[in-house]
Image 1: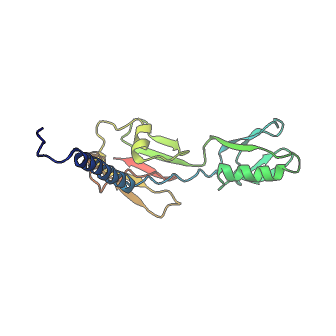
Image 2: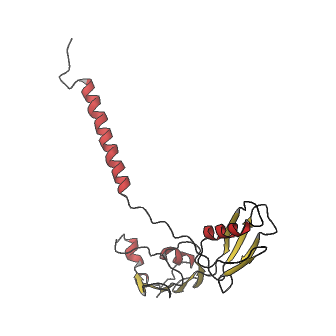
Length: 200
């Protein structure tokens, strides 16, 4: 019987499995090395926001409330709460804590139904300039899209983001054309409350 001059079959299978494991390990390491997107900051209520306070199985306490100019809301039986600057989870916990005197193990959920305290502005060569609510993270591209996109003569390479009074930066420039070309110097800037996007 003739025998092949090649490697024994078990060695062939061994090297095949070894190559597969090495390839899988490299792919896994590359996946771990990918930068992860930062988690968006939780929404903090502010004056002008409209909230829905839901207390499970307690319809007489559950109600829609308006955050007043002093940052407070009022609820039946338990009085006033400072809502401004608090997240939905934090405010729910505080309300539940006060409700324990009148409700056994209260289950409280606070939902933002209308955002008026956090806004941004888009001006200039866009289809629908104006004020927009900022109730979730919004990038400059999303903000321009929300405003109907560019008009024909918009200068996309010189977009300005004028910071709101609470920001440490002043004016940031965004080059839309460079961003589309994949230039790493251009970042899809996240808009902050009271920012104004100006498209010349």
